Image (cartoon, rainbow, N blue to C red; front, side, top):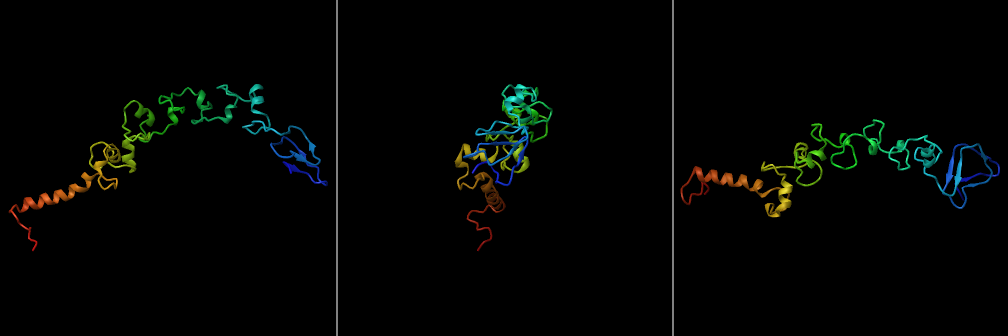
Length: 199
C-alpha cells in the first residue's frame, strides 16, 4: 500500500508533485525525482497548490499576507474582487459581521446593507432573521394580514392566543369576514327573531 505503487517494470518521473499522509509508505517501488516534489508523512499547507508551503510563500514574499495570519492572500476571501481580502479591505463593516457592507445583502436595493439598516433601526426585523420585514412582505415569505405593520408570525410568537387553531393565520384575519357578513344580515333585517328568509 501507499500513495503511489510503482511496478517492477515502471519507473515514473515525478515533477512538482506532493505525495504525503499515506500509509504505510508514500511511494512503493522505483521512481525518478525530477525536482519540486514533496514526499513526506506530513502534508504541508499549500492553499494555492504551487508546490510551495504557505509558510514559505509568505516568508519569501511570493505571496502577500496583509493580515499576517500566515495564509497567502490569494487563498482568502475577497468578496468584492478589489484585490484586497476582506480582513484588509478599507470598505466599512458597520454591522461588525466580518464582511464589508458592500458585500452584504441589500434586499431592497437602496444601497444600504440590510444588517446596517436593522442595526441602526432604519428597518424592522421583528423575527431577528437579519432580513428587513418589508423585504419579507415584498417577496411573499411573510404576511401582515391585518396591515398593522408587524409580521403575522411575530404577533403570533409574542401572543400565541392570537392564533387559536395554530394554523399560522391570525384569528382576526379569519373571523372578520364572518362577523362582517353577520353584521350585514342584521343591518338589512333588524326584526327580532327573524330567520332572514330561511324556513
